Image 1 (cartoon, rainbow, N blue to C red):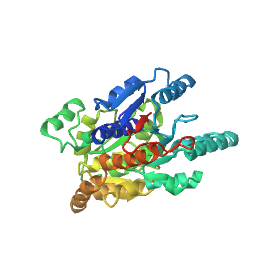
Image 2 (image 1 turned 135 degrees about the vertical axis):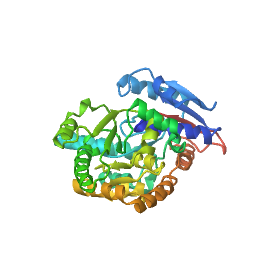
Image 3 (image 1 turned 90 degrees about the horizontal axis):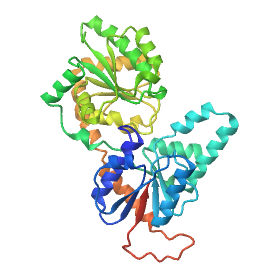
Length: 388
């Protein structure tokens, strides 16, 4: 697992299940290293290691055999990449976005594209219930695959509790000053570095912003810090930095642990997230939990997630992004309003609220009699759930 993406989702769902449900039996089925990262869990959780590589025939066979041996009532597939077939029990599935499907469709020929669409439609259609992480993702599934609306539950993501430890202390500020030599005002982006994240336009907007601030004699030492993947796979971004003339003012820090990332969120002047596509988009909420003003896209799920707490922009318009950042930097009254709204917006999302909804579906689906069996499940019987 990583600090981003599906790994974060699994960790938080399982840990919250451990706090909320001490009765039903849960089996965590997967690679031992990933299961270990979840941490200590109550006695009604049991880990079942899968030793063969994921997404291989032998790995899938091990997984299916484990479900049969354990006599699970239900399995939760935590993302759309897995292809559940011939499982011995019903499954529910979490869908985070349609990006993998959409990006493949652009790269594949017509035959492969059609096969991929049909396979995805079959996987979603056979699920007993689907968890969509936003109304936007639910709408995408309905439009692309014709999935009935009542089969899809919108269950939002939420912030990792480590982002809720209050504001940065003096020791925290000294840590990033000494370890990362950050002792100046900065804009921040945190997340993966890939085409749909729109990082190149952020850099171009920052370059235009520097020129605008120079006219006003403001923030002469402002930097742009980018936290996320290793830059080696994205050489074009280095070229964008040089072409934009901001090579002394843009810093790529790569991956940083959550305990350090929260300090950067807290100390940033503005968090910039004009992504072109998000199934949910956690980083803006993580920044909002620290009262940091957020600039976000007006497309995909982001308006739904940030509500009225962020300034929304057209992510394809560099100068609109620049003007929004400039406005937030120089307008103190706006910053104060955004800070208050940010706390309120971030508080609307919680893992406890989301996992209670997941548990409700587990109960309904897991206790439902299978077509080949009589309705002999006694009231109060334990649900045996596999989490892949």
